[in-house]
Amino acid sequence: TQSRPPGLILPMRRVLPHGSSLQLLLSSNPLSNRNECYGYDISSNTDPTREMWRSHFAAETSPFHQFGRDFPGGAAGRRPTIRRQASNPENYFFVAERVAFFGINRPDRESHVSDRADVDPNESWVEERLALASCDALDSIVIISHSPPKESLYGRAEERFARCGGAVLPVLTVSGNAQPRTYCMTRDAAGRERVAVTVEALQSGPLLISVVRDPDGGGDFFHVEDVDPVDSNRRCPALS
Image (tube, rainbow, N blue to C red; front, side, top):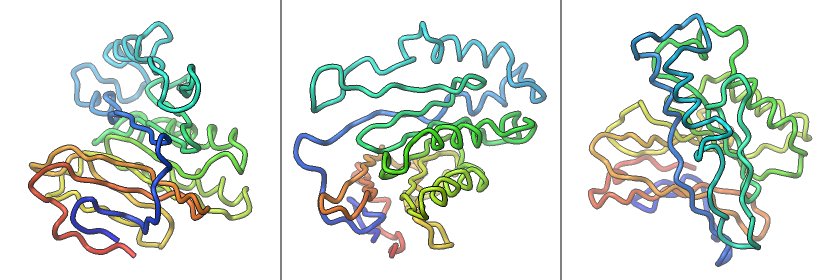
């Protein structure tokens, strides 16, 4: 269902047990609008601006390359390892609490990554990381990008589902750029377990997005709370 905050984008029965929650602050890829910067070379995967960003935020010597603190719960040293794509280190991946998180480089306008590269780095990255995960290693997938991914990217996830006996994992896409008037969540029209939410609605505040696991084995669900006191979800359609 989808209603006034907190709005549920899939039916939810129970939350994670106390002490098992996980809070992360993630941003959509800052490289995503570099195609609007002076000197951007659409025919190449690199230029001085992109390499400057990569050296400051994605290089192994950068303080932002890996998580700097242990995650809550469990013993000391409990933090996921961030994997980065060799050709496009702004693309990252990590697994926390059996949830696969992808950060991909998806600009708003025409770009090398989305339109000129021989092989789309975003798609190859999703395909590569999901291929390395065993069929019983993940319960859901979260994709974070500046603009919504191309439909073909989801095909890489569907290949995994088929390889794993047809078991479909729920997929949440968090992106900006669309600039709608509300934070209404949308569900895939074809009935697949895919939902999307924007983080850039007009005149709206931050969102608290949670992955919620049913302790009875019913799978993962996505919970979105609009913390803005002006309720931007009041006229959202129901999701069933």
